[in-house]
Length: 329
Length: 140
Image 1: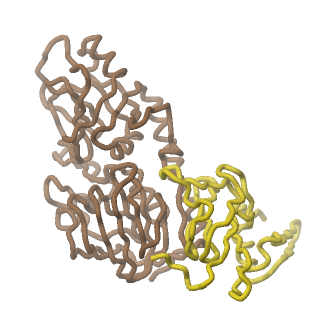
Image 2: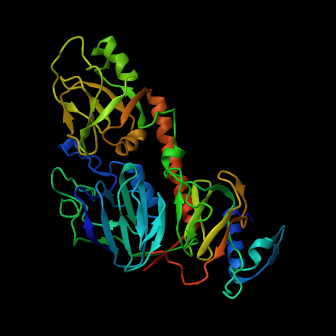
């Protein structure tokens, strides 16, 4: 059990998302960085899809109410457990009464906290995710607030071979590709259905220009700004059609939008590309002011990248099981 | 019978905890002999009367990570005052980062191994001059 002593806005309970509900107009919600969320569970021996806490704003102070194990992954949030520094991507046994403080991020944007046994909130439409936009799921359909108490789905105490816990190699190292400049993030993108409708100059600048993340960027989507607008040879109207997280739309302004976890299930803007699923976590950790660069790829590369993510995750799961012992508390 | 590296490390850790320096086991078609490395045989000095140097050792076979890839500075530098059990560095064994911790509160007088070097189980990594007042050394 965990009590929220203090929290900034927009921090919520999330899991891997409300999968399969888009046909009913539901956005998937779920962690923006689903890889960090899955790792926060994997290192504790939880199912990958157990619910965890997503932190987007800081500071945060939480009190542990029962002996358990916790893991903090994603952005380096300058975490301290009872005043002791926790390195990034770290798992550690936690005792009743200890206080976890997250001061703020130095690198990345979103932090995740897993709890042994997973966080127990009701499953709604197949997921424990908070849909902040529609006000349901998670803890009463809202962001966390001081005084909230979160229960573990299963009370599990954890002993580690290392009393100070252990960490994992962050995916930014394990899954690195290409060479990005400072403050740049590379994303692999498959050209989408309306890509051929864009003029040559737009197609070229889509791949070659850097796209700055504007402050109008959140869990619904990131609005980008580039030097020259992306234009189509003919301004055709389109009917609304299904879109997925990662879809890059181009509204009439010519400045692209990447649709993300809380996006609508359908949209009518032309799609120039789709960020591959294996790279969505990279967007979640890129902050306004930073630059995104799109690298063209095909379905084969996307599948290989997905396999790399799966291998990383199962290797972390396997190695972590040697370090921990779990028992019912 | 097959024994993984992780299992051997587990056995060595338990041997160290129990003060056992060598172990022999055998069965039909196999035998196993383990000897605790010299550095692991004496446990952390507990005497406060003689301010002996204390050594922080590697918890695992792997690569020494003195600076976490997401952080701007090494976790520990020479001259730094550290608390008992404070994390000084990491040893990367595959994708896992195991912590190298300070066996006593005190001051780091020497960093014995460079970032990126391969270390073994029990390799001495930091020399620490124990603090004169040996509390639990919490800096806060």
